Amino acid sequence: MLTLFFVQILFIIACVWAGFLFYKYILSQDQDKPVIFYALSGLILITLITQLFVLFMPVSVYFTSGLLVGLACIGLFKRTDIKLLFQKILNEFSSLSLPARILFIIIWIIILNISAGPVIMDDSESYHIQSIKWMQEYGTVPGLVNLHERFGFNSSWFVCVASSNLIPGTAGGFTLFNSILSVWLSFASISKISQFQREKNFHSAFAIMIIFILSLVIWPLLRGNAASTNYDFISTCVILVLSLEIFHSPNNKILPTTEWIIWPVFLFTVRVINFPYLILSLVALLFFIKQKRLKMIILVMVFCLLLIIPFLIRSVILAGYPFYPVTYFDWFNVDWKPDPQITERLLQYIKYYNRVPTTYLEIEQTKALGSNWIPSWFHFLFLFDKILVAAGTAGLVLGAIILF
Image (tube, rainbow, N blue to C red; front, top):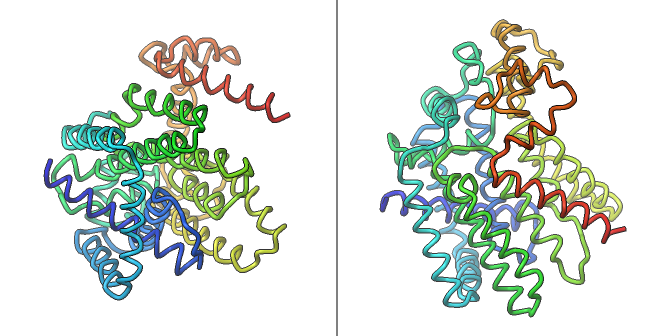
């Protein structure tokens, strides 16, 4: 567990430092950002670099070491920036009250302990870790989908996790980035609660506190995520952080920033099913066009293309389709495409399993429900999922009423 803790610290520093470099020297933005913004943007930058590399070479320990040494060398030349960044981190942490600091440290220890234990998610053991190990040992393998249909599920999150191979042969090496996400979101939530308490904004503080408590109580979120390679929680983390910063902005002005464009594009490369988030990118892009920020638009669009294009290329190399398991966009004539019948069965399983799990109804029974599947879907949800669905629906309805 102690080794995992030191590696966590190492990658947290690497991500935050990479994010600082991204804002200051790539986007040329000097405005102050919350530490969580540096962390997430730095994580995305590291993922972009790794995605480009994995197309040609394995993501071995030599790649990870080279990446970390490169960031350290930049830090030696930019010692003033390093001092400013660490001062900002220290200021944000010291702004917390003593009980808040103690709470954060306790939660970090809990997350660390869970992450150091066994992997507990079925998908992580069945194909997540296998896909990651292929990247670490062989890079991108043409037609890997033919070994198992789920090996064709390309994800930039698995590419990112593949770079965390400084502690190979342990479960903690595969769950490292997921546990770091749980730590980051805990710190961001506690920090926001403390900020709103200082500002006497008790309504917002209470709302975030409720969300944070639910995130701790509901096992698959902060705690369960730390013991898996799950690529769903990164989406939850990114959208929640965006929401916290945007809907509690000064004077209640919702002003799209570069994160609105870049972060949803990154989530699309995490899972193609996240494509609805691209609407946020489109809204922000139109806002930037209206402001005539041409240089920023070009920089952000180039960065987004560098995220998307390697992702699509890798999907074609793995499975023959850019959006596998969707086969509608059959643009490439390669000879390693999977058996169409196997892909069709996989699509049918995905479609109907997500309506009612096979624990309760067989796929054919769910299929027979037709358009009346929603009551059965809600009935067989776990209690915590029912709470989330009910609260989310109520929030959308109340938000729409208040807005209009």
